[in-house]
Image (cartoon, rainbow, N blue to C red):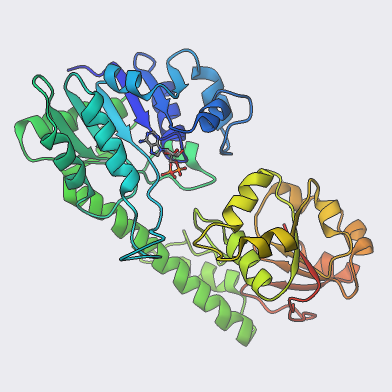
Length: 407
Ligand code: ADP
């Protein structure tokens, strides 16, 4: 089979950028990204895409309406497709066994059931979401228990390694693409079909093929190794603050060891999909702070949605009563005791901090959770500055009282 038509279930952070890049690099393949959410699809079809990634707008603008489509017509897209990516959400369970830890696979199962109901010819089904090992078995069981005459399935694992903020570069210049399939003639044929798609732009030596379970486990193992590095440098940053060492200098020195390497040794308040700003906000709210929040890229509804999510708070009314969302950084900082900087938007580096200092309560505290500001200049203005992994000469601990601002 030559793949001519791809469907992707789930127009989220993984499905959207991945399929946009496939469409860009495979002009002869029609790629349709589907979602149950009509709102999400209309955002993908608008000028303001639902996610922000450098370079994404350009790729979408080039391919949308040519060989890249965003649609809510899931049935039609599944029926037309030779290959279907499942890139639906796998949230953490908020109930029952494994609550707060285990992945909730209900959307994966839902997607597999949709395919089983709607498929009328052979399909290669590719699990792209990050899932526990053996999730492909659940997909296999659902599909193969509902097989119709003339419809056969091959199930592959093809985990995504893109990082937030560099998704398009990560996809265009992937260090490795991992494809796992069954050790049967048909399974290996399906693996080769997916390899062929990536070979449109990824050198064959960077495409690794394994069995299904190795592929699933490798994704989790890579995440675990990266998390270990971040945990190590964040623990070291606390030691730096206590001893007067500077975590950036320590990271530079340690990272020169080729066995360790320099990447992923940046201390900061978080390096995750679920923004650390949410947890910083939650901690401040728990301490009774009033928050004024500004984010140039996140919609107001999304901010309230994240802050009132059951994993974050059991008291949504506290959030509504104590959080005000602003449209500019300047209005957010007016009259506050402290600024907490949680995201590294360039816009924040260019703010007029003299003007900001003027309108804040005094003493004016600023916590640079991303280490992107000029701390000396801020101290010269009069700010009490605190950052991560480095003790500054004139710092003071921020106590959550009165109003705070999270940027
Ligand atoms: P990820 O980070 O894994 O891409 P997101 O939460 O950003 O996850 O996006 C997953 C998307 O999958 C959501 O927009 C959700 O509406 C969509 N989705 C969930 N189940 C289905 C389904 N069966 N068919 C189509 N889309 C689905």
